[in-house]
Amino acid sequence: METTNSSQWPTGSILAYGTFGTRTPAGKRYRLRATAALAAFTILWLLSIYLWKTHVSPTLLWGTIGAIAPGLTFSFVAWETHRYWLSLDELARRLQLEAAAWTYLVGIAAGMLFGGFSFVFYNSASVWFWCSPMWVILLEPIRAFVLYRLAKRY
Amino acid sequence: MKNELRVLRARHRLSQADLAEKLGVSRQTVNAIETEKYDPSLPLAFKIAELFQSRIEDVFLPNGKDPHV
Image (tube, rainbow over all chains, first blue to last red; front, side, top):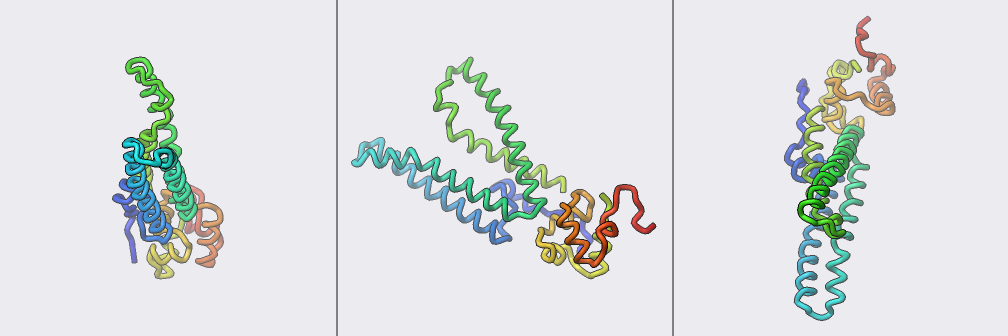
């Protein structure tokens, strides 16, 4: 019988994926689907952009795929994340939601700080700069790190 | 909040993992409740009390209250 006071949260999974491991069916499903979606997206997106840029016919089709693929993929990943959160128990869900809330606040603060400097010094105030998908990718490690720190409390 | 979960679990010869399975939560959640780092929701608190056939106030005690008085 355990007398340990250790939680033993799966650190690797938290930092790499922002999840609590694949021991549960929901954890397995989330990782499998998110990884498959991102892998398919990477191949499809790079291929479609290449074909569109090199004017391989039909260019309109490749351009359209290249345009909608990021949004479609990340909508799917977001939906799967939501399903994964719903499958968690109350403590794990609380940690996930708190990590998401902190990430949102860090995103607002860091985005505005960086945006202000960019606007003044680099003249990068185009709509494409503000809507760059890179922002989402930069926020994920922050979410994973906050989740790790929060889990350590318990 | 103080609680008697560890004592009750030991009395019933359950591991943290066994108890977690019976309650439908993770082992980490059981550990966090036992170490008094996390107060469970009311439904989970009732479930724990029901599992050990105790009253909720016998399992969970307000801070500072001696469980054995």
